[in-house]
Amino acid sequence: MTDVKETLASLLSELRRGTIVMGVLSQLAEPQYGYSLVSLLEEKGIAVEPGTLYPLLRRLEKQELLESRWDTNESRPRKYYLLSEVGKQVFAELQQEWRKLVASMEGLMNEPEGGDRDGTR
Amino acid sequence: MELVDRYIHAVTARLPETQREDIKRELLSVIEDMLEERSPESPPTVEDAESVLLELGHPSELAAKYRGYERYLIGPALIDAYWTTLKIVTAAIVFSLAAALAIDSFRTDAGMLDSALSFLASLVSSVAQGFL
Image 1 (cartoon, rainbow over the protein chains, first blue to last red):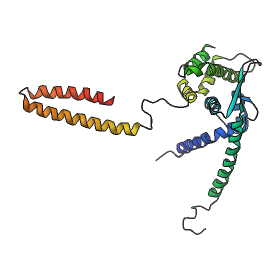
Image 2 (image 1 turned 120 degrees about the horizontal axis):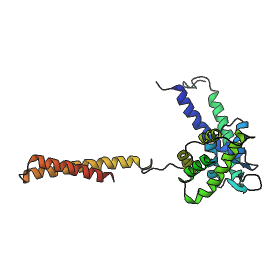
Image 3 (image 1 turned 90 degrees about the vertical axis):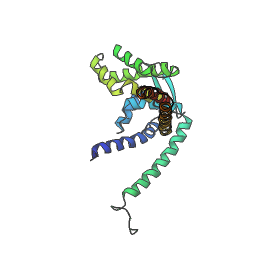
Image 4 (image 1 turned 135 degrees about the vertical axis):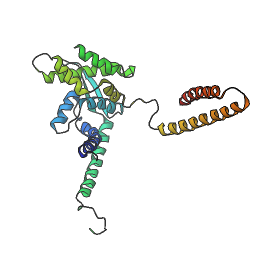
């Protein structure tokens, strides 16, 4: 017998992995540095491991969705990330797609138990 | 802190040289941020540093995330073709060496044991070559 909890945990982590990029993009209309972004997302109920987030930020920068600059005026130099023009555009589209997806999923979830297997609702 | 330096080195040593400096700088700054959050007043202890580094994960895993891909000798796209080829090559080697052994044992009067031993030796060495 497979462990239900284990299966669920791995499915959930896959689901989260798919949404984390959107979560990150949504918070970068204002510049943030790595650690402030972790705290910001956590505050809003999206827990992200720092070991996942920092490499992700660089990847998004490489894909030209984010821009970055080093701020050396503070006590400690920090790398700030901000949505680029391409990033804004991509995020707007992603948002639309996400809303569609949520609506469709809601439709599926609200079907009566067992769906409409016999063709009569 | 030495522990942090060693950790950062272990991560960046696994990364392409062009990205090393920047990732090093960024890692140091985020680790310092994390340390500061753990003990805002006093200087961080070794225990704080350990827990921060544990949260970031094993250096080779973190480096893999920075690289964005895992390193393979044979990637997932080719592994099936690789196995198929390997099976065919191995079968061909075993078959042809067995044929050679059979012919050899008819042709010469050398003892069966000798031929069998040299058959085994060439089998091992050719299969090893087959892998490459």
